[in-house]
Image (cartoon, rainbow, N blue to C red):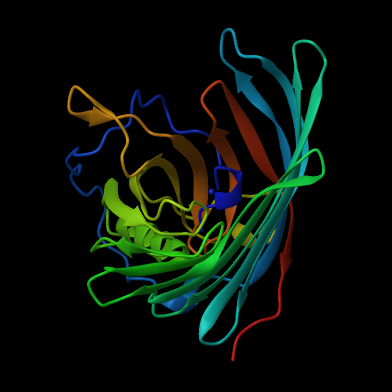
Length: 282
């Protein structure tokens, strides 16, 4: 799960200047745990507060407020997920800009098919829509068929993962002692196709108290930092600069708590305020 519509994804990892593609895995720190399966993701509904975490020097944004709702349901043969958020940005002059997003997907449990729809709004008016369906083959290659913003098809490169499949892959990598996972993701949040990603993972942690969501206190977790790269991003010195980064803590059931989303000039914190079970399963 990427929290994709926020561009969209615990405490931020220690400073990792300029995440780049092509780094090598660090040695495994612990013995591997049993791999998680597609059924490991818990059906749940999470409510998050959105606040300004940090504004960089000379940034025009001085305040952020809002809320996000994320829901994922085990629909037997697929995951049905929906993410909605509203966010108000205030600049130095006191002008406020209201933004919103409604992002929904239906992803097959085998990681081969994705139906997606994203509507983004500014000041209450629809700014953009992206919708369509993607189909992958066994090697991760495939095709994305868009119905919005225009009817078109784009190829998907080999090795591509769908959003929830990527979540499981990162959790299994962290549980196996890996520190890095590089893979393209197709989530339907852009009309440009798959995005390359680099995920840096901290060592797997055992159960810890989670006062905001006691049900998570019995689960293992890993803090992760995920960098997203545009397909044709410019390169400098052999390294690609991320277009967007998110830092978060993932629990072994796919729930994320505190997140830091980096938009360049400023970062936004999404803090889990309430976690509820959601009906699901066969």
